[in-house]
Length: 72
Image (cartoon, rainbow, N blue to C red; front, side, top):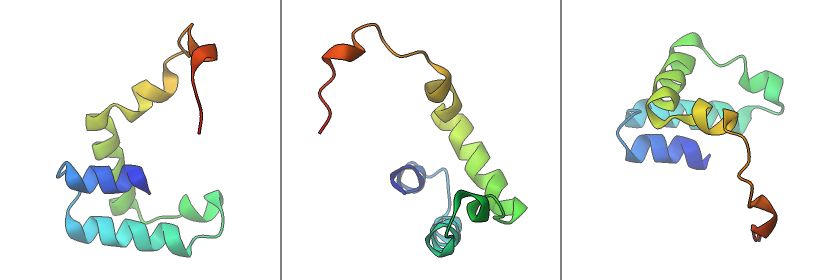
């Protein structure tokens, strides 16, 4: 949900889109159910993700110093 909130804060989603997407995710009981989100909402998420570079982040190989990362 943090990514959806960030999309709203960056004005990449409208308040209405954010509410609808958040509600869809909240009622979904599996990743497959989330994938059934209506096309207009998916397009909004895809556009926002592109602007934010989400796919680029996911495709970037881990840094060589990842062993030094502290996870909490």
